[in-house]
Length: 335
Image (cartoon, rainbow, N blue to C red; front, top):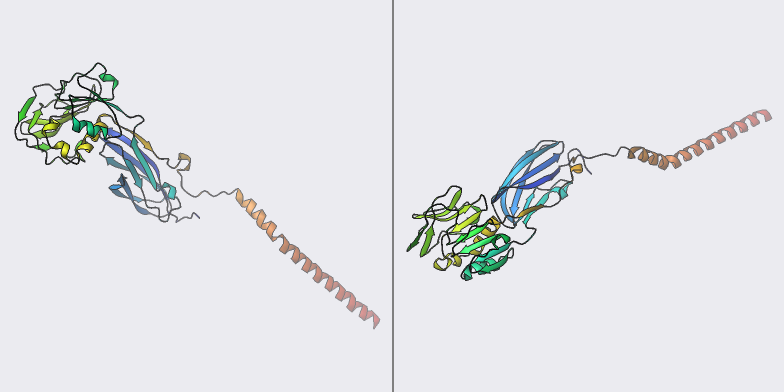
């Protein structure tokens, strides 16, 4: 049963809040209702892999708030957990959050033909792929548009430009042939987190000039080769490498890279598993004092037979005493 020293500790809140297009903050509240201090590790996992851990010191009858940063995109099973040893509240020892979508996004690929890109998109189950050879008038009916080696047009939906200069870029784009060398790569960005591009090679590439609001991802000595923009009227990603002139499609991380671009341009929603209801957030033992009289009456009822036997024994002793007195008194008169 619950007692004063029982470690009544549980996760009573876990909420994912998007901080930008490529990251979340996971807000966690731990409730500890006990008369003793306790230090417990709070563990965060992503798709079963350990992502982060923080030890929190809990005072008696207190709550503590934690914030975990999740710099990732895509569909992931995220879990936050605490040890349940010694706690009667094991149901609150783990909470799961799933990143997902209410509907599968419709992606339009405008290309003269790109086997690598089509294969990567068709292998990604979270999209419905449509193709065109030239941009049509229905671009705004899609959730995302990919321009591959074609002259792009203005659009109000998220876009991915592959060896096609984004219309929003101000300045001159330049094409180069020959040896391609990486001068700088932004490895910490979620789009490049699972894609190892350190051995990237290309015989042809296109650079774009630095533009306000544009974040470079990959830079060569000649200029920006890949970049992202997260603003109005819509976000976009630029890759200045024709996929038939680079070893990028041959790398293991290429499908993940393409999937991350889709997820970054078309963000997902967050669903959370049920937590301890607010009415039950006070985890201290609640004693039902209204049941005490009932238990006392029951105990009294159970003790009634013993009282009857004591009464009968006393009555018997009294009768024996009276009989003995009458016997002795009668004997005295007879003498």
